[in-house]
Image 1 (cartoon, each protein chain N blue to C red):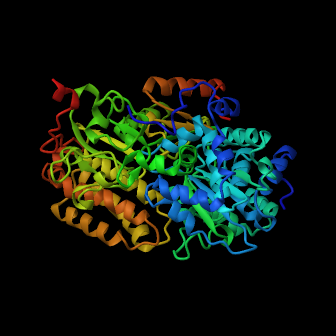
Image 2: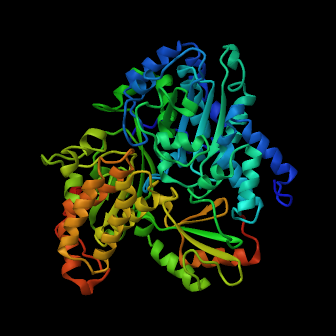
Image 3: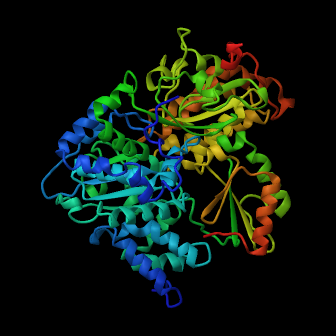
Length: 451
Length: 169
């Protein structure tokens, strides 16, 4: 049984309300934090080893310590709730079910950062969630945890919810800030980083929902205790949103010590593949991270079991491994077409490119067109080389990581599944039929091993 | 300001509440939330006079509104039906059969993606990931998500729309 810190009370009826949340020990971390010096809170977060849960995995405490603190200039905390990466729906779960956990984390984080105004930038399509968050904010205010002179500390804080309007790129922190300023979500060149010039040119910390929520248990149990959970630099717990061809899609909290095989096949988590089908491939960290075939997913390049943590998943780098990313875990069974799946993701990135950088604006639709051609049985072998060439010219050549996010899935698909691409080309009559399992997977499910 | 276009007083009160969330000199930050209100109140899409009205309210140039309205996929730049069926077609939804759901809607309503049914009731939009990957396939209708879709479930939803009993807000 994995240790739960964020979702430990998620099953309790009414946990969405202040009253029930408080009864479970809610807001005790705020009370504890107010007895600490702001810098001590940042140190605690550093000690915890908490890494950004939005995908990049940058150490949170270090990010906080970069915040510029000029006198007379406001500082802001902005929570990135623009969850839009295909495969990722964990932040939605947190906000819908335990909104006070986010609010509590924001109060502690704002106190540590010296921010008196904080915004939750939420993707516009989650149109019912702002009501839930605003209800929680009002309840927290009524209980004295928001507003002026909170708990007599002299600390003031207002939290506002800001709805976006449908643009994946606004999950990139500088695009998010542009959007929050009422502009198109075009990413900014960095430096300057938001910690120096962020919202309205003021020092700003942008953190993911899960990251800020994790500050609450860190303060409750101490950073040192938090760091003991997990393994290596993958400390604490991580929310994984699992979807695709699995028996039990949903949001799971893991302590990053379990194997990928256990996560997919055990009843505690995904419960295996429906209808007894075999595992073909998986994207373990949201659509932008490299897809891996089953054999490489379950074992590292050294033949060791692969674990659900940052280091193990990225073992071998992009050549063979993949990444933890945002924890958006997409499973493909033996009947799925990697070419078709890659094509739909390419369409996604082409649609979501902001158009600011030429390689991304021109390259992402090009990737989609080539993939569509191959998938429809009209491709040639030269198209695979062209696909490879185009993605190489996008990667690393754009202002923001969307270009990389568009290129990596294509690169990994070609790297690991080139024969499937060739099959589509060699069998034009096949049109959109599936290549099938072929040589890709021969995993031994946990249950079968036990027998 | 247009003489014919103006928010209802209660909506205007909401606009003032929204603008108060940002520093006084940063009213432009309210643009996206206010455009959501405008789209909802003025027929489900953003006509130029509506955008001009929003520009005047927020004391910004009309072009600043146009460039934002055309950037974000949730804003409709042409008329839509009363019910906009926004069906996700991205990765995990595709893996779980969104192709079939989209085709079923096309066949049932005799429209393609981007089109509105002859009775003006339904517009079909295929959209990119809506963050419901574990509950796929899905579509958004108004404020709410409809998940784990089957053809039968889609038929029920369409019937509720025709009866005018499906909650949008």
